[in-house]
Length: 338
Image (cartoon, rainbow, N blue to C red; front, side, top):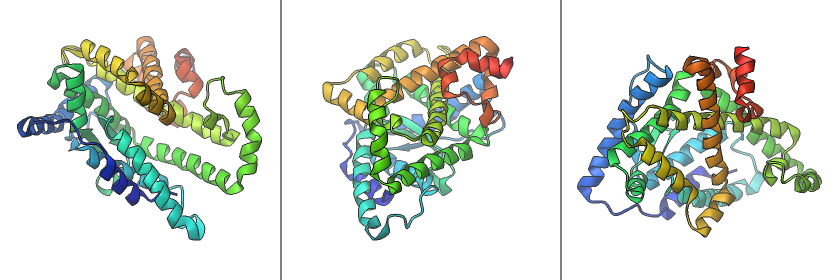
């Protein structure tokens, strides 16, 4: 469905350049980010109790084109499990190339905003890679006027939490991949079935558009929506848990953490009209709500049953919170802790 090589080439070509930085300052930022990942993960392990026996590894520091290429590779590995390479008939290569250009445009837009990410399907042999986008980190700390070392460590705390989620919880990577495969396969089947069934669901979707889901979500079949709900609940948990951890590590590790959080939250919600419109179209505003809802869930559970009690979420897919439990964390506590 997507020519990922074309997506990588298009995005890397079109991505905007980063801020003007003196060579010495740029080198220091790269060294800082690479080394701070190991320090940050040590703090995350101490707080969460996860991954105590794993090696402490540095992160991979990239520029914007580097992030585009890595993101395209990881997405290609993930979606390739669900869709056979030959799908699409004789026009398949042409359609895939067009989709690759469109995806490249999207990746180019996102590449100027992403500070870092842990891609469980990226890196050598697609075994996972923690990426930090140096020009974006420097641009953000300059714009917010926050201490550079504190901000870099704070970002690393978030991304190292994601790395531990996938490396310290042995079943999580395959579970996530299987759920994505179910969703993508279902969407592909819907496309193959034609437009009639989709149009048949459109009137109900329009009538119910104010009930919490977007049009795309409401157009899903019940089977697709079930998979979507599980993936949404999981991604909300992962993002919220990481947001909770990066603040809970505390001012003894990141002295300006309260100032950084306040300014970063304002930055997430800011931007001009065009930027806000793009965020809404691309679903980035919904992503921001995931951070907030997931952090609220994590905070409630940790306050109620402690970090050890919270860590029951990682026992199996059956102990993950449902979408309803994300909104009602007390229900998850009752289900898992009686």
